[in-house]
Amino acid sequence: MKLTLNKSLIFFGIISATLACSPESVDGDGNGLTPTNSDASFTVTKTSENHYRLTSSNNNYISSKWDIGIGTFSPGPNVYDIFLPDEGTYDIGHQIIGQGGIVGGTATQKITVEKSDPKAGNLIKGGKFMDAADVAQWTLTFPNPSSTALWTWGAGSATFTSSGWNRNVMYQAVEVVEGRKYQADAIVSSKTGVSDSWFEIYVGYKKPTANEDYTGDGTDSSWLRGINTWAGSGKDPFAKAKISVVGSKNSNNPDGYFTATKTGTAYFAIRSGGNDMKDGITITSVEFRGVN
Image 1 (cartoon, helix red, strand yellow):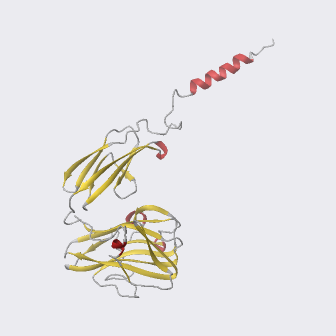
Image 2: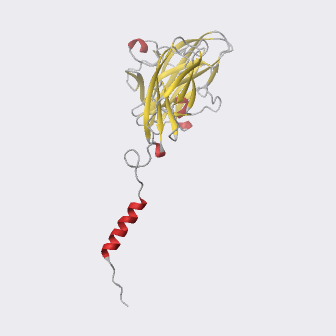
Image 3: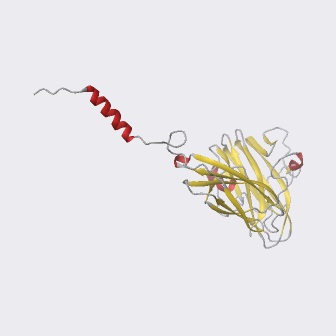
């Protein structure tokens, strides 16, 4: 027996099946990944001096990212206890994240800290390089007229470039208290990455001298924080992040601590150089503070 197919019925059957398998609605731009609620708002509660609790207003998303006044977002919990040790006004941001890392919404608030924490306040002056007054807080040990190991100053950052194994040291004095532990950090970035290069933070009682390299009171393996291609960091481009996160860990001092052996003046120094630093390493928000 010969069967006759009704092509119209087959066509409409395919359309019906397709519609039945399609969602009634999609979120965001149609990718189904954006959080269904774009409310990234949060509350701020002061829990003690210099300590604050950030609480997300809802949990209708996969994860949170926070900017606690440093200009870049990092993962954090929905209820986030933060410590702001320095006097000033902070722009706090919150992002809600959906599947695939899609940002569903962003909210911001300001927190004003009236005074610095007496132990953990930042000892660095001019660490944001906002203007000539900030730059004047720093001294260079290598004037370097050959222009092959240069610090250049931007509005809110400083960039170091070098070639031909040339180097420079930028430093300032800090006052420390015997027996107290201190920790260094900074925000760094590089558009190109670097080759055969180092960018390291040292602290020591010995004062840096003109046209000489600097290793604090130790050796060239006593750095606290560092971008170092031989130690596995800096070869590839990296976006703005803390040097304690994107830099190498010193196996002799993985937490980057300096413990003061006497009260008085020490020197915070950034020693950098290399064979080919390409577009260089940019730094801002330099800090050196006591550890509570």
